[in-house]
Length: 125
Length: 176
Image 1 (spheres, rainbow over the protein chains, first blue to last red):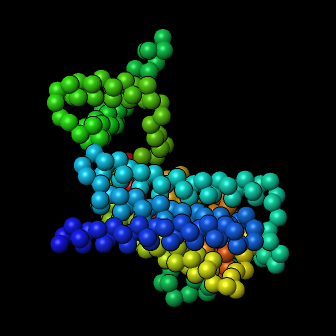
Image 2 (image 1 turned 90 degrees about the vertical axis):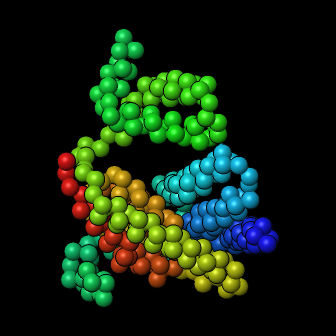
Image 3 (image 1 turned 60 degrees about the horizontal axis):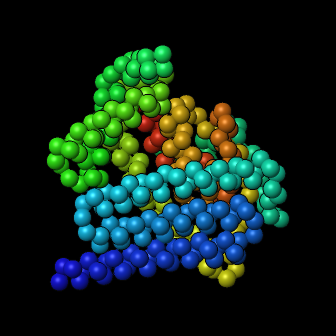
C-alpha cells in the first residue's frame, strides 16, 4: 500500500518534471528574442530537472545514492541561475538587440524620492 | 618553500580549516557508505591533503559577523518564500509560453540596490533570476539591471518583499 502511494507520487513528480522541461523547450522555440528565451529556459529547466531528481530521491535505494542526488539538487539550484545570468549578461554586453516594442525604463533615482515611497505603498516600508 | 607557504595558510585559520576538514570528512563517510577503519584512514589522509592544498580558496570576508539566531530565522524565512516564488514563476512562465497569444511586453529596467555584502548580493541577484518574469542582467555598484518579461513583473522587483527581508538580514549583522 505504502509502496503504491510512493510510486504514484514518483509518477506525478516525473510527469511534472517532464511537463516543465517541455514548456522550456516550447518557450525556446516560440519566444521572440534571446532574453525572453532565457526566461523560459532558466526557470523551467531548474524546476523540471529538480522535480525529476526529487522523484529519483524517493525511489532510489541506498543512503549513498540519496545523498548524491541531494547534492545534485543543490547544484542545479545554484548553478542554473548563475549560468542564465551569465548568458544574459554576455548577450547584453555584446549588444544583442531587444525585440521590437520593448521598453527601457530608468527607475534608478526614484527610490530616494517621495514618489518612490508612494510606489512602495502598503508594504509597511 | 611552497610547502611552508601552504602550511602557513592552513594554520592561519586553524579552527576554520579543521571545520572544513571535518565537514569534508562527514561528506566522504556519507558518500562512501561504509564505516570501517580503512575508510577512516583514507578519508583523513585525503581530506587533510585537500584542505592543505585549497587553503587559499576559503571564503575570506573582510568583516566577519557574529552568529545570531535572528539571522538564521530570517534566512530560513527567506528560503521558504523563495521556494514559493520559484514555484509561482514556473507556472507563470508555463502560462505565458502555452497561451496562444503570448502576452509579453518585454524590456529592461534599471533599479537601485543598496546591498553591501557580496554574499547577500549574490543571493539577491540569483533570486531575482529565479522568480516570476525577471532576470538579472547586471549588478554593478548599486545599479541593478533587470530584464522583465512583462512590464508588471519588471516593476514588481522595485517593491519586492524579499528585498526587505534580505535588507533586514544584512542590517542585523553584528560585527565581530
